[in-house]
Length: 200
Image (cartoon, rainbow, N blue to C red; front, side):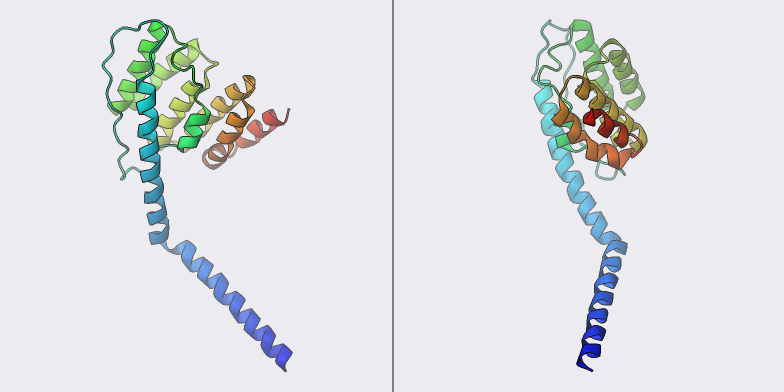
């Protein structure tokens, strides 16, 4: 009798736990609060990262381009900026100092267009720069950032995957591996390709 009663109590406890988990998963308030906290953290780190980039100078003096602080990420946007750890992983310390004057000017024009909320122009400038410098992972990272912030997760995942492939080609394996969680979330089809490349 005691054994049966113990099993019933254990069963009821398990049912209560399962129901509590289901209720927690279906409560949008919990997700919304966590999402807003993530957005605030990412916005702060994103601005810190761009502030650091603004103080780097190219090896050759570039034409004067006005520098502005990056526009803050609007909390109302459906998708926040990328994880700061991911952006740092794809940013070699020599970038953008390894660009020539015209390349640096094009990079600044792309960033300026993005700060002015003109994603199409920014992406066109970044793609033109990538055609010249396909080996720089930071460029793919910045393209991924634009797609990520404008609500195109699959394209963002592809761009981050390209950054990871470039990092692997440069034998920066730990930096490439750091991109895997974001790639897996945004574009799961790309993640196995990166894992295979890392395993070689």
